[in-house]
Length: 193
Ligand SMILES: Cc1cc2nc3c(=O)[nH]c(=O)nc-3n(C[C@H](O)[C@H](O)[C@H](O)COP(=O)(O)O)c2cc1C
Image (tube, rainbow, N blue to C red; front, side):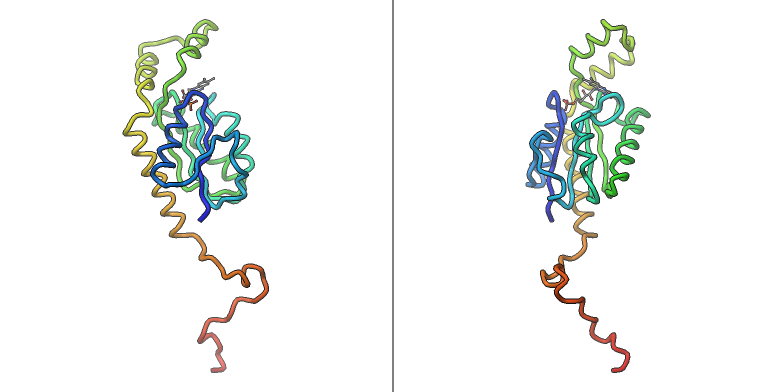
């Protein structure tokens, strides 16, 4: 099985999750800027940070190059991970990957600290008001991803790998894979015997 972890992270939250996945699986982990082409792998874990309700642009560009693979996606966001906003982001990510003929094995989102400069800039520009609800959510996000998020992400990735290996086609001998020999008939299939 050829597998790897590729992630995009601006301020380090998604990188932390990616590193936890690499640590638990012993698989190679690459920032998206220097990641190998997805064609080299059977199953990939793809990480992103959420921007305007979708995976960030770098992750999206890489995602569009993934074709016919098994994919586990993970991401961090400022919103509550079980909010409608997060659910819509999961659904959109699922759809993008499926459009590339991929099998989405699983998806995982958790909160990640929002850069305070971005929050301040959005206030200056008259963005969403800092309501008590929003302040509480941003304060909570500051503590994430935490140990529980990393443990949950590890579990999702381990289960995805197990699911993939349980269903993966058995490797063919090289002569069959190259089409030199045809598949032998199973013993007992000859009705004239
Ligand atoms: C420009 C910008 C746009 C963002 N848009 C969203 C968003 O639409 N929804 C959300 O929940 N969080 C949003 N966030 C918060 C980030 O997704 C969150 O802080 C994430 O954990 C950052 O991950 P990173 O540290 O790996 O870059 C945004 C952050 C930035 C800087």
